[in-house]
Length: 79
Image (tube, rainbow, N blue to C red):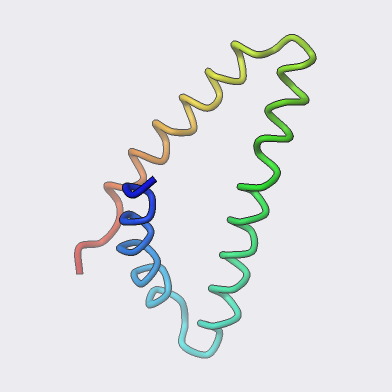
């Protein structure tokens, strides 16, 4: 859990400053809302699909998604 919180602390300001200043607050709010909604809906979606007999496939999807996020993390600008 602490790794996720530490990662967000670094990524969110970078994301915030990449948005145009005139829409920075609204844009960041929309991004946060989409992120939180996705985070809340994911366990429900996983459970529904797993109950239909695709439990192993859902773990494969999660692994691919995690690998994609790991690769995207390298694209975060250093400045």
